[in-house]
Image 1 (cartoon, rainbow, N blue to C red):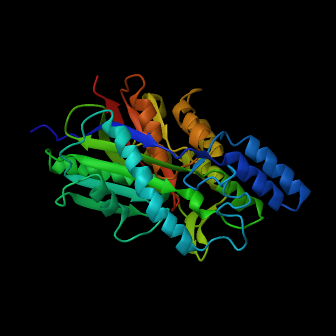
Image 2: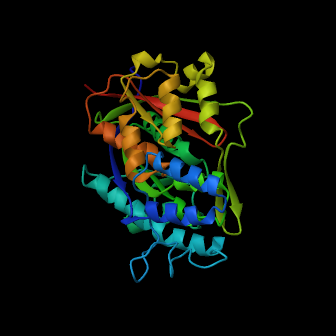
Image 3: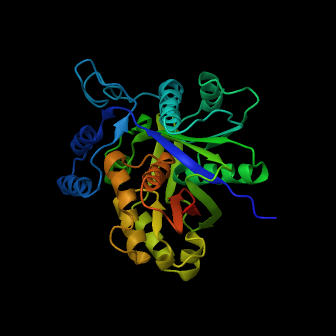
Length: 358
């Protein structure tokens, strides 16, 4: 019998309407006491490839950002984890539903049988999967799965789970949602490395429909690998004042070193030679990470254009980012042999192949 197939039919995306990128840069710049470090931060911010990052945090009465007077982060000490999780419980479902509505504007999403949600920037029970399912009127019989704390490659885990479901139950209609609120986790630090890490992150949500209906991208074989001795390079630490992101400045160099190893490079591309791949959906974790992938795999200029565009428009939205890149590719030319690839805590590389139907 022919092998069962699963298709990524469409993706809807959503971001808040509050752009906080330049306000954060000014706030961070003021915190760095050493002049040389301050100048380095300014250069790195200018070269980040990011123009906008969006936040669910409200503007102040006078239109100010979260770090301005009367903003969420105005007073020291900064809000505790409880206050941040209260906001997560209020705003994550709303942003997730906005992405689902954007998906529903493209195609019918009735008859959902499974709901897979990925989010690493908050905790609430009942989970946001239950909250959203109830608000959008999903049947109580819908099977739900909540993927937490996998970070930037969680979209891969969510989509491959949907693929497994559809391949085992061809009548399944799987709603996949990634929703991340990274701006809830600003930390009161003055060291340049954590400030540069926070400079990358914004809020966003993306929803996808995965079914056996031949529409969109066929989802191919998933793959995963891990760089040795790298588990401390990317991590979230749960603290009394939110989740502290640690993104080591060593990450791009370690990814480059890994991709220079033919065995790791083959594992990180699903065994394909880079010249065989005509579309790349690489998680936009940062400009230097994209540069490392492009250089080490000897990709042609513009191969990561969609990833760079997502980075410029939104920053790194953790798990939602890869979905934003795939959404752009779905709207583009036909793909014969594509690769989706994301790096995250571990330091792990995970991905899958994809192709258009024609």
